[in-house]
Image (cartoon, rainbow, N blue to C red):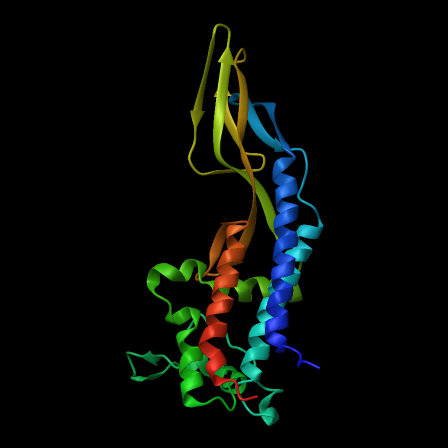
Length: 261
């Protein structure tokens, strides 16, 4: 009988299955043309609103949450294998956005306010070799190049994992990429494309009452990420899936040489 594959590998494979399902649900939604343009009369005049007639499947955020859970726990499973069995209950792959051991330039000592983070780091990395520990440090979001930190894959993974486990389903929003607005009034028709994203219920105008307006483009589904200074904003699906997968694979590849059993 062949040996079972390592649990972190199975976790990743399961995450990939959830990713395929999430992309299927996304495709069904986008292909359904789930929007219309509605006239809205406001104080400033005739406005036109991008109204979405349907929401994405309620299974989409659940499926994304399942994918995130398997990726996050896969990292934990792998790091456990890099230390001795007696440490397994303590070890967890750390994901930090600030260096717990950073020195305060004013005092030349580590920041006192990060003592709790240092205790957590030491517990999560119990029993790792110096070389393995150095790799874990290099993988941290705080060690990323400045232009990478806004959407660092591991921080994104941690943020989504904490949301899914502790607060609510992963939040999804809807919008339209690079919308084109078509204007029509007696004897004339023209259009204008606006680079960027219109969110649901975005309005354009005001326009003369005799003008007909239509908004058209590619529907998109968006993840709303975080509220902290390090990671916040909206990221589009399914591109976010690639970010999460690449970050996890990179961590796997870097740590696999240190597996002990």
